[in-house]
Image (cartoon, rainbow, N blue to C red; front, top):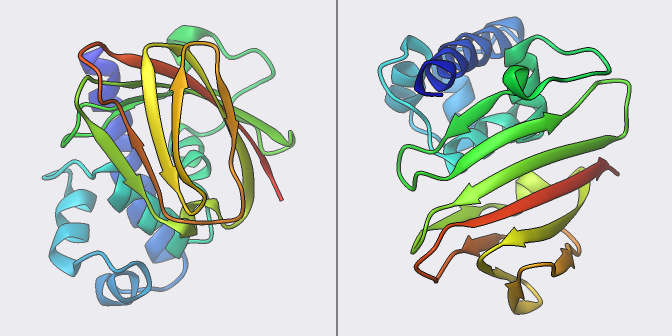
Length: 188
């Protein structure tokens, strides 16, 4: 899987550069729109650094895309049948958070993402990442704590949480075993 993740990272770096250049933006323009440092963006585009989930969300939002849309553009789309071996996999270098894009097509309103959150780790996602989507998290294995504007929600295996209006969200695995969950989302 590491080779697949490396290939996804290289395609993602190229896609970020393509999205930026396609809009006629300089590195400074993208930095101003995303709140991500110009040097960091340059390192990501060159493949010298792997972006965290939070950085990718901010870059995607600057392009008016969701994280999933940015990843799918990097993977160059798929047909109706998406084999497990063809699903884009990305690992957050800070947390080890593993994200598999199970299903996404430009002509379909539903996206499915599988995430594995390592024990004792968290991902903080800004409200901008939820501005144009509605989503539900369904916990398959382990335990999760999701903190948003409505408070702290503790989920056990089988529990499902629908997200409310856009807000900063922290998804935490406070346990000592990995948590695996599915995110189903639609564009609003």
